[in-house]
Amino acid sequence: MSIFKETADENLIQGRHILDSEVPAEGSLLRNPLDESIEFPKVTYLKDISSDETFKKIVVIPVRLFKLFLKSIPAYKANEKIEGIDDVVRVDYQDKTYKVQAYSRRNSKLPIKNKTKVIVIDETMPAIVVNYITHELSKIIADDKNGVIKTMVIGTSNDVSKGLHWKSGASKNFKDGEFVSTYLANFLTYRSLSKIEFLVVASEGPLLLPKVSTDEISEMCDILTTSFKLDDDKSRQWKDETLKMWDIMGGELVRSLYI
Image (cartoon, rainbow, N blue to C red; front, side, top):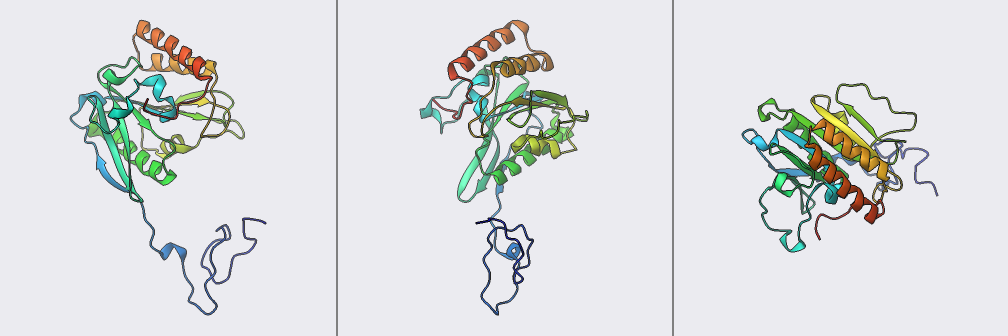
């Protein structure tokens, strides 16, 4: 059975691509599905960083890389306020609250400096929520009064042949059939962003359970060290520990913030 309708039902005001839409009873009025009540996410909190000097530089990572970049959080502290961890955006959707947090140097394995934050995005959140969150983050980054001077957005893709790194404004030509998705794609559509870099780590397998080679992780570490001018000795130590952990994990990305 085809999931795509070959023709549009004449009683519906909609495109041919709408999947298995319900047909009104004979004789009923024409209806537009978009007129029906639809719940959209609601942004309930947005952190003001205009006077916060610790947000001058930002590294955005997916939650699956959490244990490579950040120190693990004991499960019993999951609902506690932890020093150096701040909510940046909170969104309510379908009776559930989703949030994105920023981590300071004290909670980071990556040897960032005091004016740098690591922001973690969980790509398993509903796509519409991820869209809202990345849009709010992009506004924070783009707003001149916030003084963000550098941002690197890191993500994975099994639709690129090798890792990619480029700065906004620079021409980046993907090979035929190559593309990125999830929040990486969202950030790429925000043309107003400047002073932002993109780092795509090539992976294999499905989005929710990809694998990444040791070479790709090694290159990611080197790019971060160079781009953010991190301390050489501390960066070398972080890279060594990261590669050891990656070897133990068998190249599988992490799916949990807590231990």
